[in-house]
Image 1 (spheres, rainbow, N blue to C red):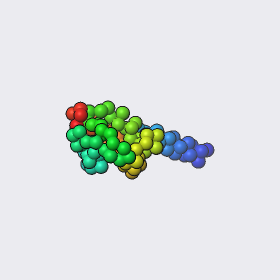
Image 2 (cartoon, one colour; image 1 turned 135 degrees about the vertical axis):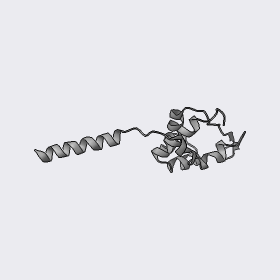
Image 3 (tube, rainbow, N blue to C red; image 1 turned 60 degrees about the horizontal axis):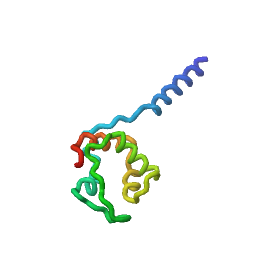
Image 4 (cartoon, rainbow, N blue to C red; image 1 turned 30 degrees about the vertical axis):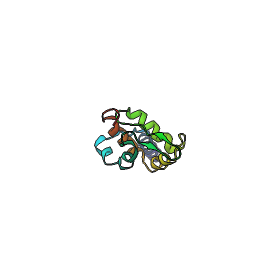
Length: 109
């Protein structure tokens, strides 16, 4: 009986750990945006890979929107070779931190 109780307690703890939401930290995100500012931090920047288009400014966007976009790039649901590669290298915590950082910036920055 004690073994069964111990297994149930451990299973409950594991479930709680996997179900925990990741909370973004804007201060930590500031140190994780080096790959972002090369495109998203340049006024009127146009990318030429894989085709020419205006790179969006993401400052001031909702953290949830940025997180959703990065997760979609990471999974391949959104297609852009550079963004797929960058997002693919980010952990869930990195994504939350970057999103928190950009959500606190002035719009259009």
